[in-house]
Image (cartoon, rainbow, N blue to C red; front, top):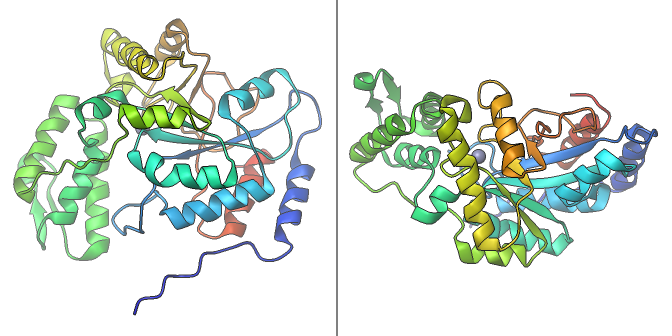
Length: 333
Ligand SMILES: [Zn+2]
């Protein structure tokens, strides 16, 4: 019989120490406060060795318990306003999720509710409307299903990728994901269709939130933010297409939830490679009041309001997870 691994917890007496350390590293001066904005994507029902970076629900649970015990978790919009205009509480953290996976509704929401924690979900509307999967999830499904021992993609300039064992599959999935990230949407679609033919099965899964779930989220202290229609690299689009991605997504989400959107997260989120000053202007014109990239470290008032950093600590023990948050809150990276 299989036994589940014990859920990691903080050693006794560690929580007061973390809180004391967080109070100690908090800047005293008004306007100097720091905010750690955590950036999740998908939550997994059980650990999946092919998927890197997304926690399973038990890992997510100890992370949320730790945040509730040791940090001040604030709604993101309130935290940004406080950081800009008032004195920030010490140990300030906000929780965000990108893309709009239904696992947020099914798995994360009950855990957040259990600990009374607020969160913001940045939703891509294209996948929601068509019930399609994101291209990166289709690559993962193809790599999971393809038979050993390798996949020949020389025709597409991608060489031969090995598929023996989980480690090789994980690496091959990463190679394909990295290569696909900066393809045009048409190239990417052709590529995932090709993978689907090779895998011999449909790679679409019902992974994304629908309108009904979005409604349920807004009834549960969950804020919704914009994340474009089709999750493109904005910097790769012409201005008109980029504007449409931003404006249409905002309008679609506002129509569903019945209130204006204020917060936006850039797809992929690297400055210059993924978005530029032009896109910052477009967001302001669209009526957004703040936007978030994927730079590591804590946000401060010194950051431009449309380029606030977000990252998720990747450590797999509670002590290391808390230590990294404290480092970011101390202004170290
Ligand atoms: Zn995203």
